[in-house]
Length: 116
Image 1 (tube, rainbow, N blue to C red):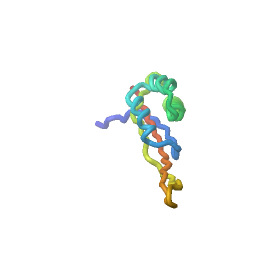
Image 2: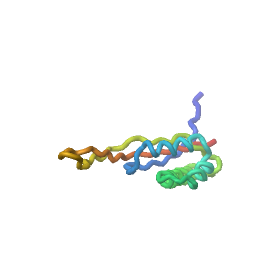
Image 3: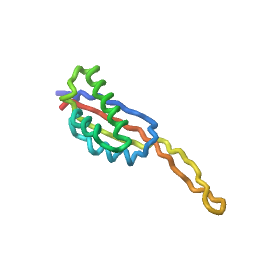
Image 4: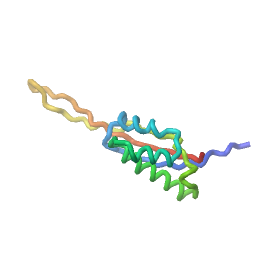
Protein backbone atom coordinates (compact mmCIF):
# COMPACT_ATOMS: atom_id res chain seq x y z
CA UNK A 1 0.00 0.00 0.00
CA UNK A 2 1.14 3.48 -0.77
CA UNK A 3 1.19 6.02 1.98
CA UNK A 4 -0.52 9.26 1.12
CA UNK A 5 1.66 12.31 1.29
CA UNK A 6 0.17 15.06 3.42
CA UNK A 7 -1.12 18.01 1.46
CA UNK A 8 1.56 20.68 1.54
CA UNK A 9 1.65 24.24 0.35
CA UNK A 10 4.63 26.53 0.40
CA UNK A 11 5.79 30.05 -0.24
CA UNK A 12 9.28 31.43 -0.59
CA UNK A 13 11.04 34.73 -0.96
CA UNK A 14 14.54 35.08 -2.33
CA UNK A 15 17.41 37.55 -2.11
CA UNK A 16 16.14 39.28 1.03
CA UNK A 17 18.71 41.78 2.31
CA UNK A 18 18.67 40.48 5.89
CA UNK A 19 21.16 38.18 7.54
CA UNK A 20 19.93 34.56 7.70
CA UNK A 21 21.07 34.36 11.34
CA UNK A 22 18.54 37.03 12.32
CA UNK A 23 15.75 35.39 10.32
CA UNK A 24 16.37 31.91 11.78
CA UNK A 25 15.87 33.28 15.30
CA UNK A 26 12.29 34.17 14.38
CA UNK A 27 11.58 31.08 12.27
CA UNK A 28 12.48 28.84 15.21
CA UNK A 29 9.64 30.45 17.17
CA UNK A 30 6.96 29.40 14.66
CA UNK A 31 8.12 25.91 13.61
CA UNK A 32 5.54 23.24 14.40
CA UNK A 33 2.82 25.70 15.42
CA UNK A 34 -0.55 26.13 13.78
CA UNK A 35 -0.65 28.75 11.04
CA UNK A 36 -3.15 30.88 12.94
CA UNK A 37 -1.02 30.87 16.09
CA UNK A 38 2.16 31.60 14.10
CA UNK A 39 0.51 34.60 12.43
CA UNK A 40 -0.51 35.95 15.82
CA UNK A 41 3.02 35.50 17.21
CA UNK A 42 4.62 37.21 14.20
CA UNK A 43 2.22 40.13 14.30
CA UNK A 44 3.40 41.19 17.75
CA UNK A 45 7.13 40.49 17.41
CA UNK A 46 9.24 43.67 17.47
CA UNK A 47 11.91 42.44 15.02
CA UNK A 48 12.39 43.64 11.44
CA UNK A 49 12.25 40.19 9.73
CA UNK A 50 8.96 39.33 11.45
CA UNK A 51 6.96 41.54 9.05
CA UNK A 52 8.51 39.80 6.04
CA UNK A 53 7.86 36.37 7.52
CA UNK A 54 4.29 37.41 8.41
CA UNK A 55 3.59 38.33 4.77
CA UNK A 56 5.24 35.13 3.57
CA UNK A 57 3.18 32.97 5.93
CA UNK A 58 -0.02 34.72 4.82
CA UNK A 59 0.96 33.94 1.24
CA UNK A 60 1.52 30.26 2.07
CA UNK A 61 -1.89 30.11 3.81
CA UNK A 62 -3.62 31.70 0.82
CA UNK A 63 -1.81 29.25 -1.51
CA UNK A 64 -3.20 26.38 0.55
CA UNK A 65 -6.71 27.83 0.52
CA UNK A 66 -6.58 28.36 -3.24
CA UNK A 67 -5.04 25.00 -4.17
CA UNK A 68 -6.62 22.63 -1.63
CA UNK A 69 -9.67 24.52 -0.27
CA UNK A 70 -8.35 24.13 3.26
CA UNK A 71 -9.23 26.36 6.18
CA UNK A 72 -6.42 28.28 7.89
CA UNK A 73 -7.35 26.68 11.23
CA UNK A 74 -6.24 23.19 10.15
CA UNK A 75 -2.82 24.22 8.79
CA UNK A 76 0.45 23.99 10.66
CA UNK A 77 3.98 25.12 9.88
CA UNK A 78 5.78 21.99 8.73
CA UNK A 79 9.05 23.60 7.70
CA UNK A 80 10.46 27.10 8.06
CA UNK A 81 13.90 27.60 6.59
CA UNK A 82 16.30 30.49 5.96
CA UNK A 83 19.14 29.63 3.60
CA UNK A 84 22.09 31.88 2.89
CA UNK A 85 21.99 33.79 -0.36
CA UNK A 86 24.78 35.61 -2.15
CA UNK A 87 26.95 37.91 -0.04
CA UNK A 88 27.53 41.49 -1.17
CA UNK A 89 31.14 42.34 -0.36
CA UNK A 90 32.11 45.94 0.36
CA UNK A 91 35.23 47.65 1.68
CA UNK A 92 35.32 50.22 4.44
CA UNK A 93 38.42 52.44 4.55
CA UNK A 94 40.64 51.93 7.59
CA UNK A 95 43.90 53.29 8.93
CA UNK A 96 47.05 53.43 6.81
CA UNK A 97 45.25 52.83 3.51
CA UNK A 98 43.87 49.44 4.41
CA UNK A 99 40.41 48.27 3.48
CA UNK A 100 38.22 46.51 6.04
CA UNK A 101 35.79 43.99 4.48
CA UNK A 102 32.06 44.32 5.13
CA UNK A 103 29.79 41.39 4.25
CA UNK A 104 26.20 42.34 3.48
CA UNK A 105 24.37 39.04 3.75
CA UNK A 106 21.21 37.99 1.93
CA UNK A 107 18.93 35.01 2.48
CA UNK A 108 16.22 32.88 0.91
CA UNK A 109 13.23 32.17 3.20
CA UNK A 110 10.94 29.16 2.63
CA UNK A 111 7.82 28.19 4.60
CA UNK A 112 5.91 24.92 4.09
CA UNK A 113 2.48 24.26 5.56
CA UNK A 114 0.66 20.96 6.00
CA UNK A 115 -2.71 19.85 7.31
CA UNK A 116 -2.88 19.06 11.03
